[in-house]
Image (cartoon, rainbow, N blue to C red; front, side, top):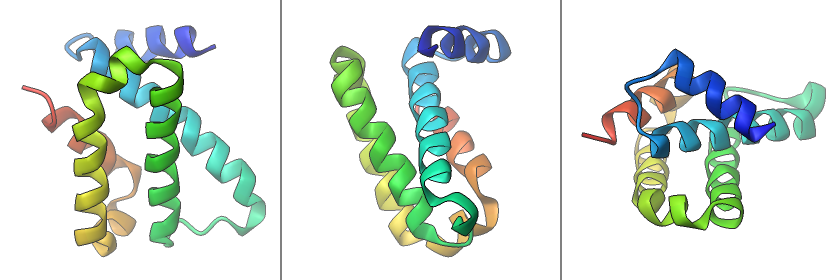
Length: 107
């Protein structure tokens, strides 16, 4: 499944590096998991949801693809730092802001 999602994202964003695509894969998978776990009680205005998604995605990459994680670990640190500094903006912009940040994280 993760390879299918990788190929789908890479097809939509051929200019992205493999690292960017794997970050997007990890975020997508973790978003689904966090929302499923929260169930009907999910509140996308709760910044904790974004923290849980980012931390879960980071852990997934660390465990599943450590060679990719070593290249992108600072990206996750920057996401979490930016999130804590601008929680209201993140909540307003949602996951779109996260994906925009992902694109800007790589030259």
